[in-house]
Length: 220
Image (cartoon, rainbow, N blue to C red):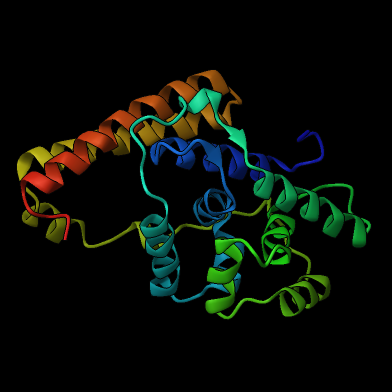
């Protein structure tokens, strides 16, 4: 199904799968795909969502709407929802419209925008991103998803954060960063079995982290 996808687009779909697993969702929804896009294709995200606070606002809205379930399928069992399949079909149509045989992150974005009934599209619209203008912008200046840029949003004032966190919370977050690093390395090497194992491990750690946040009153 994903033979035409660029490597970054495939990684975006993998991270959508991963995000669905984190939330214990039963299916991979368009919102998970948007989370994957926010995480993986930072150049595209920065092009349309320059203010960091705007990107964070979208992520918080998605996280607020995606209620975690303790009895969801295991990450490797998750399937695309019908809504997500429709988004991917729209993405393929957008690529075909521009005579592009490869489906990159920009077409995933257009696919999300085309299905205006899904929450991800509404959030993008609220952020000022609309199908017609995004399509025109990408037609005028094609996106190159082989280029990556640092995500300045992932470089906070670490000293201030460390000083404010309880030791057990800090240890849990350090473990999660280590797991994510191993998972991203596995994805780069196309070792998706190892990546899934890391995703399972991180899901457990994040459940523990949520519990710690509640214990310390940090989940407000």
